[in-house]
Length: 73
Image (cartoon, rainbow, N blue to C red; front, side, top):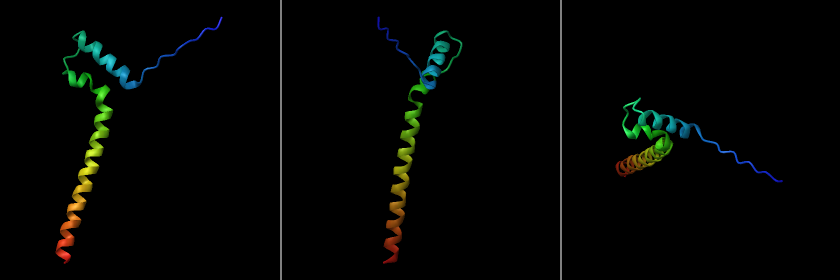
């Protein structure tokens, strides 16, 4: 007989979300839902913030270079 076992793993943010969810639903904590769900979307939000910051910095550098080019002429 061939037995196959499946191992289910959960990441740290996933387990942290489950802990926060249980604490919220049992009224142990009185946090808003956006904080309870933060372990799920928090990493993505940090990446998006870095990308937006990089784009804004690149745009600012381009504008400054354009201004200096106008004064050099």
